[in-house]
Picture 1 (cartoon, rainbow, N blue to C red):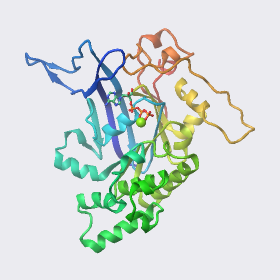
Picture 2 (picture 1 turned 90 degrees about the vertical axis):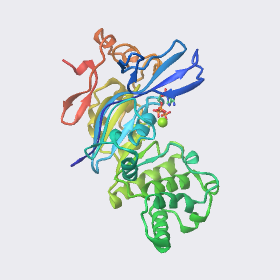
Picture 3 (picture 1 turned 45 degrees about the horizontal axis):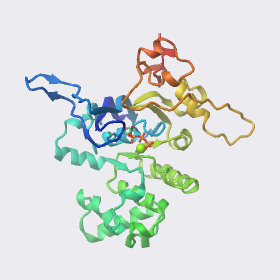
Picture 4 (picture 1 turned 135 degrees about the vertical axis):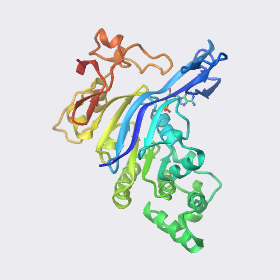
Length: 348
Ligand SMILES: Nc1ncnc2c1ncn2[C@@H]1O[C@H](COP(=O)(O)OP(=O)(O)OP(=O)(O)O)[C@@H](O)[C@H]1O
Ligand SMILES: [Mg+2]
């Protein structure tokens, strides 16, 4: 299987202005700043009234064509920031993003435009993702027109019919506005809009979190069916592992801006190595009452990405924490075939 996407040491830091946690404003941090004497400073200068939010802090992973990757982790760990960096909705602070062998951070705006056709992003909340006063027809036409994907009106109309049918909605929906649709229908429209450009990679940011459980389950079924028909590769973000299990053969677990474990989903369920993954898995409900699993609880709350703990980021909450964990940050290393972990319990 060909690698479609590689991330190398990707970082995204924000400068947060304000004191005592009150955010006054935030700015994006340039990768390299130049001091008045012309010396390059890689880390940005942060004044006393500013702090640095390490939203994404050195992420490395790859995605193979047709092999969906699930990205899981608790709220605030940096999933949305990472996804937005991947499609360059925001500029990363550092690192590399290689799509089909090309470093997309080096592309000029014209080349990046073509890349945008190949990589699509579905926003976390469908209600915020659709312009309120636009008809669904106009919303779906936009990407088709922008990328000149059809010739003439007849072709456009039949493409719209095709797209709306693909996501299981009727043609009448095209003449409605977003406010006339349910949350589930809005999410289907968002999917149709993303698929309008025939993308090779679709980054889906928690496509079910704003939906009722049963509606969310139908969206996951739809994603599975669409992939069979269209062959698009997904990066699917979710809070918990049970959502990604159905459509993602591989999964990456994120904690405070870093990947702590990645590998085949079955390996993660049967032999999770990282204490954080073990805790996530123990919280997934199992339908079989015969199987009993004890829930592993982590101590305390996740620390803020502003004041990161020294050493392993999980160490203040981890019951296995050793001296080394409190001083040295563990690297992500291969445990066995395609299964990676960043934990001192497994490092020599
Ligand atoms: N523009 C910004 N300025 C400052 N901090 C930000 C900005 N965007 C995100 N953050 C911070 O970066 C961290 C990661 O946020 P992000 O939204 O990526 O997390 P997430 O994993 O997607 O969370 P959720 O599951 O709740 O959607 C959080 O601490 C958040 O407050
Ligand atoms: Mg998010």
